[in-house]
Amino acid sequence: MIEVMLITALSLYGIAIAISAYRIVIGPSLPDRVVALDMIGVMLVSSIAVISVLLGTTAFLEVILILAILAFISTIAFSKYIERGVIIERKRDK
Amino acid sequence: MKINNVILRTVAKIVVFIILTLATYLFLAGHNSPGGGFIGGLVLASALVLLFIVYDIETVQKAIPVDFKKVAAFGAFLSVGTGFGALIFDVPFLSQSFAYFNLPFFGETELTTVTIFEAGVALVVVGVVVTIILSISEDV
Image 1 (cartoon, each protein chain N blue to C red):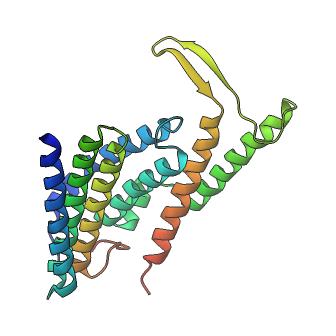
Image 2: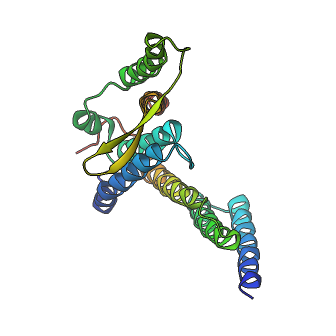
């Protein structure tokens, strides 16, 4: 029973990731694409958690942590690019 | 135009320490689970990149007055040095050894010379990655 639920959740995550990828392709503006990329990162983290419950292993937990950190940093970098036009500044204007 | 990003700066001060903790864990987990010097160095470099994104280059380099090219050179020196250290004991190049010690707080602990080699690898990765990121982010 629990296995059917987990596999159903994985299929729904796949459909959601496909919809987000469609939004990345057609997205009219840059913030739409950034939000879709962040959604894909969060859903990848969740689906890896579901997979590790399904397989009964703890080998993927470091993957979850590193993927969450990289999604966080990349979202911040994209947001700063949208806001400022530059990612790493030489000197902040006071 | 001045942009108020106080929330981002406050969050980054905490998140950097979480990332550094994960980097230390991955560095020490390298023997029989995923981890090691290379991955620990990459995660450490990602913490530094987060600092460089949130603050600016001059602020971070005033807080961490380290030349990252010298860090990479010192790491390579350390790794090769452990390889040559094996020659003193009349064993082949890059031979590693380990032993068990009774430490006062940790109990019986396995200490290896691979850890020094991995520390050198981590320093090389941190230095090279931060140097590349700072070089390609230069304004034209």
